Image (cartoon, rainbow, N blue to C red; front, side, top):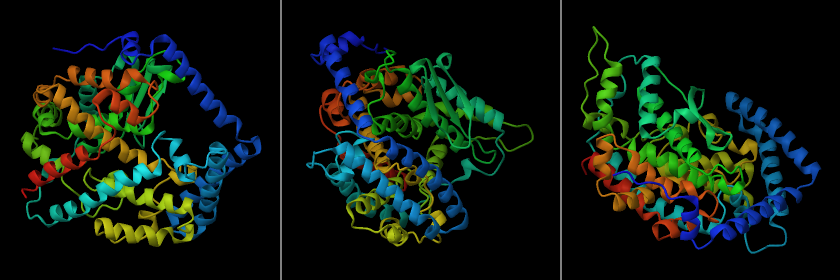
Amino acid sequence: MTMSSPSREEEEETRGGGSLGTARRILELEGEAYKKRVCIPAELAARKAELEAAANHAWVKARQNNDFASFAPLLRDCFDTAAEIAMLQRGENREISLYSQMLDEYEMGMPAERIDALFGELLDELVPLIARIRASPNKPSLGPLAGRKFPIDAQKEVCRSIVTALGFDESRGRIDVSVHPFTMSLSGGHDVRITSRFSDDDWYQGLMGTVHEGGHAMYEQNLGDSDLSIDSFLSMGVHESQSLFWERHVGKSVGFYKWARPILMDAFHREGEEDFSHSAEELYAAVNAVDFDNLIRVDADELTYPLHVILRYGIERDVVSGNLDVDDIPSRWNGDMKKFLDIDVPDDSRGCLQDVHWSFLAIGYFPTYLIGAIMAAQLAHYCGHDIPNKDLLIEEGKFDEIRSWLTRKVHVHGRRYKSLDELLVAEVGEPLNAKYFIDYLTKKYLDLYKI
C-alpha cells in the first residue's frame, strides 16, 4: 500500500504550530537572512566577488601546473576574507567559534564541537575497518563494469527510465548532460533540472550520477510551492542525505540490481558481442568494490569517502583557528592521506589542489557531504523499521512507499525546523547519530569481502 503524504496543515498541527507557528517561522527566517545581508558592507561584498574570480582563475592554473605556491597567497586571502565575513555575521556573540559561524552558513545548528565528536567516532571506526577490508584476499570482480563499450544513447535511456521509476517527475523537470552532474531548481518545484555525465566504457558512473541527482531533485519537487524561504531546503546536509539515500541505500543495494538487471541487459545487448549477462550479485559486488588507492574525493567509494571529507574538515578548522598555516596545507594533506588511507600523494594536483571549494570561499561546506551520508544511513534504518518489506519493494521496483516516507519525514517540512538535529528528533526520535552509518558500512563490507 502506498503511503499518502499528509497535508501542510496536518504537518503544522502535528508540531503544534498551525498557521501562527508558520508565520512566526517565516518572520524568523527573513529576519536572520536580513541580518546576514546588512552586516556586510558593500565594499566587502565587492571585494569578495573580485577575490572569488581571481582565486578561481589562480586555482585552475595552479592545478594544471601542480603549483600550490602560486595559489597560496590568494588562498590565504580566501580564508581571511571568509573569516572577516563570519566575524561580522557573528556580531557580539562570542559563545560560538569563528569556524562554527562559517559552518552555520551551510549547516545551521551544527557547531564544530558537534562535528568533531561525530567525525571522531567515524575516524576511530573506519580506519581499522578499511585496513581489515584491504587485507582481505576476497576482492570482488570488476568485470561487470568494463571490458566493452556501452553506447551513450542507451545509457541515457536507462538512466531516464530508472530515475523516473524512483520518482523523478519529468512533467516538472528534465534530464540533461553536463561535465559535472548537478541539480537546479527553477520556479520552486515546478521546474527541477538534473544533469549527468556518461562515458562509453563505464555505464555505472552515469547511472549513479543520475540516481544521486535524482535524489536531490525529488527533494526539490516535494517542497512546498509558496516561493517563501520556509519552503526551501533545510540545509546542505539534509539535501545531501536525500541524494545519498537513493544512491547508496537503494542504488547500491543487491535488491536494486535484482530489479535493474533486466533493464541493463536489454539496453546493453548487442548482436555479435558477448552478452551483458552478469548476475545481480555480480553487479552488486562490482559497483561496491573498494578502490583503496583512489586519490580523488569525487571518485571515491562510499567506504573511503568519509575520510576524504574528514581530512578537509580538519584542515579548514585548523587554518581558521590559527593552528595551521596555509603554506603547510600540502604537507598536512599528504600526511593525513597516509595516516587515514595509507595512500602516498604523488603531487598537489591530485592532492590539496583537487577541489574548487576554497577558491569560492566555501569554507565550512565540506562537512555537509559527510553529514548527509550519516543522515542518509539513519533515515534508511528508520525507513526499514517503518516499512519492514523495504528491501523487497526495492527488488520489485516499487519505490512509491519509500519515496512517500521520505516526503513525509523530510521533504514537506522545508525549513520549518531550525536544524537537521531538530528535524530528526521530531521525525525519527533522535538527533544525528553516526552509529547507523558505521553499522551499515561495517556489515556491508565485511560481508562483501567475506571477513
